[in-house]
Amino acid sequence: MYKDEEIKKKVKTGTWTREDTARCIEDLEQAPDLTVYTEEIYSVSYGVFAYNFREYAFPLIEICREAGFHLERSKEKSRIYLALVRLYFCLGFSPKIVEYGLKYANSGFTLRSPLKSVYNTIVAAFTDCGLFQEADLYLEKMMDISRLDPCGSGVDFWDSDTLNELVYYDSRVYVKLGIGDLAEAEQAAGNMQAILEEKELPEDGKAFFLLQKEFTDMYLRLYQQKDKTTIAEEFNTYMKKMESGEGARDTLSFCVCYFVEFLQVMAEEERWEDILRIGNYIRNAKNFSGSFCPVYKLMRTAAYRSDKEEIRQQIPEFERMYLKSLEQEKENYDQMVRLLAKEELRIERLKESMEKDTLTSCLNRAAFDRNSKRFIQNHGTGSLVFIDLDYLKEINDCYGHENGDRYLVHFAKNVKRVIDREDMLYRYAGDEFLILSVLSAEEIRKQMNKILEENPIHFHINGECRHISFSYGVVAFEEKEGKLAELVKEADSRMYQCKNQNHRRISKRGKTE
Image 1 (cartoon, rainbow, N blue to C red):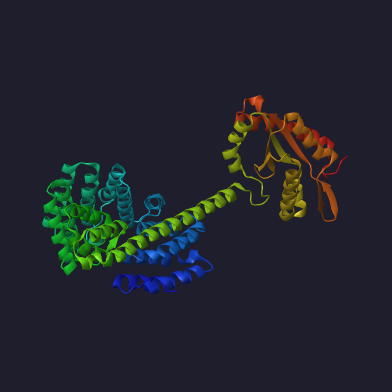
Image 2: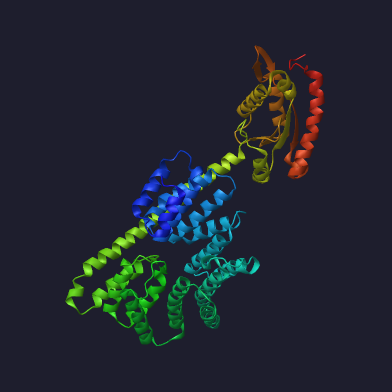
């Protein structure tokens, strides 16, 4: 397994490979405790994201979830959330991008630069779904990081407020166009241009954003310009520059969906050969992300519409590409459904474990607080029983807490056997239990008395057989009109009345007088 520093070095220097990714994932899958590898998991996720190795996103998501499942709220868990944001971004699965982005934002362990990036990723996810108002909201949250927590002087450009501003105004163009506010989009493009002209930027940073802005300006003109012939020619010229390498930068990632909009304009202009040339470039370039299906579909259409025989002969190949892409999309969908099903099962198991008392396996007080109102509403009539064990302190003091635990477990196990199948037994506190019963108050009293007097629970300790004695109070739901707090209070009061009677009836050694 590569160490974290080795992974970071490979990713930053451009030497990270698919083989490196596969090796790390294989090692992580075999690790006995993933929680000690959170830094490595995080760095591998960045490698998958930066190099667009989407085929490794699914297994790494499984690893992230498994690690996160065993982590308490911590800096390490917040980094797992960040990793999941990136991986789901690679797959273009917007709901999970937003879910884990917000989990990171609310984790309490955020860092300035990653939080800015997370908000911007959420913006992209909402934009892809056509939820532009929501995207606009999180775009403002992204900028609030700079406004409310300005970075200090001397900060590297790639973590600076200037970078935030450039990203903000660039994203704002696309968001405002989606909302339908062309004037605001034009203003955002102008603000981005002013920063590039007026502020001193490092050469690599300026070159990066000049290239980004060139495409953004062209996309803006797509909405300004009604002459489709002009738009198609401008896009063709831009792509020729990209194909020649003049404008290509490995560090800049383009979303395919925006290029598809231009290709559709070219299709309306019947520029079939240009569509095929550009489509071939896009499918082979490594800095494009998103679904390629629309590109292949347009290439297939272009081949059918071409007058050239050599192009028409490629129709089977374009159809194969399109069908393969559709199959991959379906496989990705199926994989996503499987992952979501596994996550849902994990959550259900976690909820179930959170509702169980770890000692007695009864439902716990938190489960009572969540479920009791619904139980009463669903059954209408029934009873609440408040139980308090007698002499647990004596068992703990005389025989040790281990035997005291056995005492509690034995009691709970035997009560579960007696009560009605629909009844629910809760461990409410240390030696206090509650029963929500579908039986009437009179019927449940008979059951409790049977356990106390006719068929008591036997507990063997140090060669001695004791009867497990308890006190209880019963109140019918209708007595307090189903009001939970009043039911518990009244049952508790009646339990103390029963305790006084038990103390007269049962000796302090737990034997019948």
